[in-house]
Length: 145
Image 1 (spheres, one colour):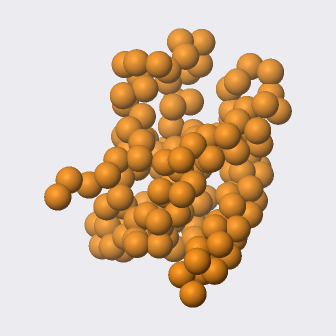
Image 2 (cartoon, rainbow, N blue to C red):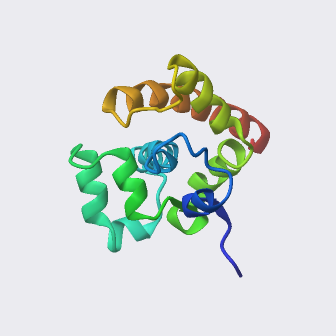
């Protein structure tokens, strides 16, 4: 069975990525989401076994969100996340809600559309993702119960 791919930033380079933005911008939004997923233990065994050093380096703020994403070629796929992580990805990332939150929380707050890969921006977006996650958990648990 083929794994579901949520995002593949390299495809953006070849298609609809705005030419006015630096290429590393394709990794920022993906890296912030991936970082949040890692920080909230929604990752699969891949990060525990093969990529534990990346997880540790990110948690210690030794690598940025865009570098974390670049290490994965801007890729987000279901094999990177555990079952709960994939359920949340389907609800939040794949549906486009994350893109809207990213736009409203970070992109709309600046004039040039170039979101800096900073821990401050990550913290701002992380707060929004956490709210969405808690809403999703509440609704998911209500439906599942």
